[in-house]
Image (cartoon, rainbow, N blue to C red; front, side, top):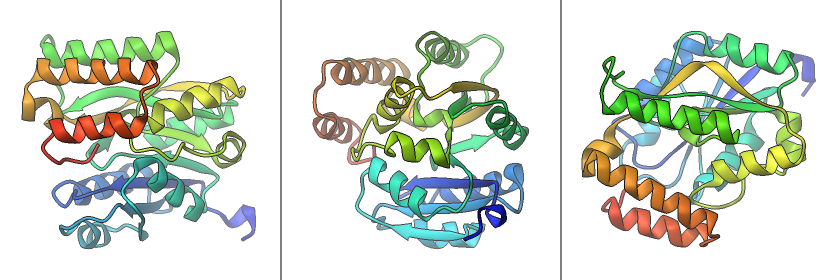
Length: 242
């Protein structure tokens, strides 16, 4: 395909049993990013209505592969036509201004980057959710890293240079950003927020979930295999997808 005719922005949404979330996420992304943005959902073998609801909500394509977030992201990236790719979780909502912020960052020389972290519904002025947001955003600024909840973006050319996402079910996002920066990728934190659902923290308790995530990060830093970490996560979340 002629590069000049490619869409400016493609969105890849990995999903697994997300029938309750995928529709609003796709609709919100379409509203925020514009009708010309390409929306691709990559399903990991859902047993609910995720695929049908993604199509009904306006996804341009719904693909499938084995359930592994890294693999799903790569499948979507290979199918995407855009010059800039945005990787969006199925339970994350974009703020107005996201499209402009991404394209301006790329025009300014960024190879990859992320949104500020936020939760949905938005927190009050001072509460534990606000503290969580501040802690995650401080970590992002200090360590120049990001998680998938922050809607990571990358140019197609940089994604190729970096070799795509690691084919692993957990921490594929952190590993990609780390590898990209080591390869000289210019990383940019956007001045807009991506808001992810509070469901993980609410299902098992706020403090329990925070401690679990810290434990998983420690395990990742100690190079425990991502597959093992994902098994622990699934056991804790009663079968939910990592």
